[in-house]
Length: 244
Length: 293
Image 1 (cartoon, chains in turn cyan, blue):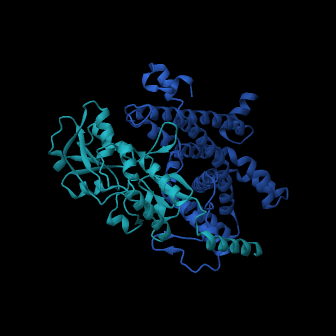
Image 2 (cartoon, helix red, strand yellow; image 1 turned 90 degrees about the horizontal axis):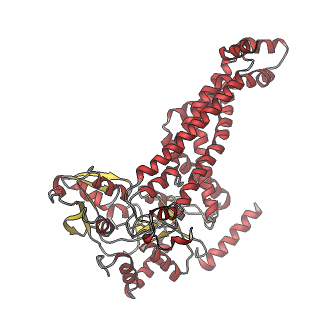
Image 3 (cartoon, one colour; image 1 turned 90 degrees about the vertical axis):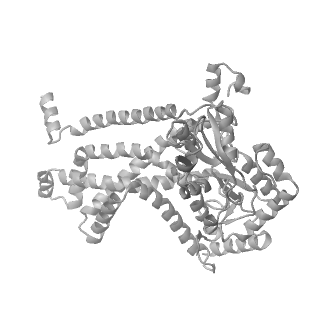
């Protein structure tokens, strides 16, 4: 019991001196969504959000660690305390904001687009079968339209569904699809107009964790103003992506 | 890995594959097979132990113990595995943290559940806030072992209970006639002889356990199925080794791996069966006795 009291006293002293700054901040990401976040061939997590997250941690003097988690359970695991931040290309939406809180967005509202096999008629957007990743903004959009939604747990599977004819088109963030269109040599094309759903992408943080959210928001705002976020955006997304 | 791997885009085919199959992610894929086997090697004895305890509890003459055993066996067998795999790690994890919280932070004045958040004090976090990665993965792995052992222990308990009942009554009666107590008869007569009756059931459970290991993915452990899906998916030119959708080949490897595992264990069980039949009052034992005579 005495030992417990001692550790407790030590911990209290810790908190008084430097808050929780000594603790490792764990950032959860999906690792399957290039170029936002993905696992490269050397088994490292890389991408726009990794560079950005590391820079935020650097500037805030935090030690950060990346944790991979399935997209479908990424919010429950944040809430349960398995990690402290989500940076996984997550659009800020009202439904999500009821469960977790968001920092100011680190990406502006970015384009979504439909991609289909070359020669597909644009009318499938209205009444065809559209592949989407489950629990995404795009899944919500298709669910509200007259088209039939075909949901998959990973973004990669939505592309396969279009290739093998299971779905007429896929609706996703345009910057995720760009690489597939470019690599397909004309087999895959964008159809219809781009549109801008959502209010941008932000880092998700537990609602009770005000301090961490304020730290992240402050540095995101700083990086938006000094142009360093725009540099990272151009480095990872090229010119297609909206900048600040 | 190899010195010629610096610029994969220019390599001839066999060298490209040599480099591709030795990337960091592929080594993680290969390691995941070892992990599956490790999980089986640890879970199987633990589940068997749980089963033995469960079966003994069911047989117990002390009714609370017997009820506990029956409750465990029937409830766990009745709930879908997948629910258990999701429930056990979360419930157990939060349960452990709650207990530590009560012990370490009696002065904490905030509620543990704040809206959606589960918040315990810093000292109660398991694994600790600054635990290194290997501690976290060992913790996750242990949770998986516990979840598997709980589920498969219940099935094993039922099988072992049946096997204990199947040992011929005459054997136990003879033991009693020699003046052995109930415990002695159990230890000396029932335990050594019950295995032959338990074996077919246990081999079923083992095969199902092998096939259930892909559920590891649900527990956030990157097992062979996770990697097959991750590596097999189409890779765009953002990656060093771009390739189209190769999942079918990766799943074929998984298929071979699991078939090999089940085929190997079938052989081991056949051996065990021969071994345990020796001298038993069963049809197989009788055949062996006649063949030898």
